[in-house]
Length: 278
Image 1 (tube, rainbow, N blue to C red):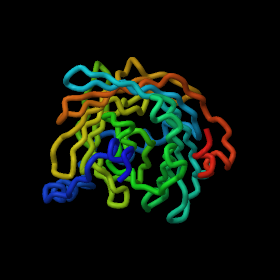
Image 2 (image 1 turned 60 degrees about the horizontal axis):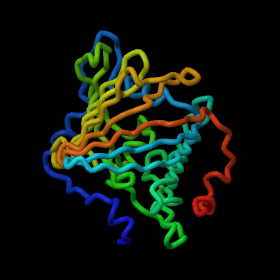
Image 3 (image 1 turned 90 degrees about the horizontal axis):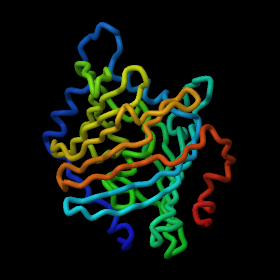
């Protein structure tokens, strides 16, 4: 394992018996008066996004001792599904994500390219500036520059990544929310066995999420203030969210500094050779 990967990769978690017990309950939903299933709710979350975006973000991390670190990255993302809603064949490309670090100096120009596929494992690549080469990797459990966010947390998800169980509605900061339990399907190779999301009913934004590992232990919690949600071209975006690691008593706040809505990317944007460019 390279120094960079050993620095930012979390250890793989074993799938415990309790994980199977939790997953076995997925899909058994009671009827709700509004007629929405858990999947219906989450499909609203998935629909609340651009066809493409370019985003500059800052990550501000702090551990239990008060030590802080800052990192910055640029992300480009594009949806490759047809606009007419045509069902794609199995293994088709759903989306592509390009992440490039700009700060701190020792990570400058490091980058990742992630291709999300329908009903199969994503294709994932990392560029190591010190080696000047691109390597195919598995980003499962990999932290974004050693923060409390993993790439699984920041790369937009697909509705087909989960099975669902809707729970009773709730309220957060005076805002009515849907509550849905997500159970990652096997091909996602998720680090989580279960995720409980709290979705703003009007804006279809996840304002809180709780995460359990494959041993059934709650390990992280995400909070995004409803007051920090902004609208761009009819799409609602949380401009700030904080992920807390419950085991390490550390936290990371992701701040969206700038966002470009629906830019036109050419095919060369996603070329692996471009990942090596500065």
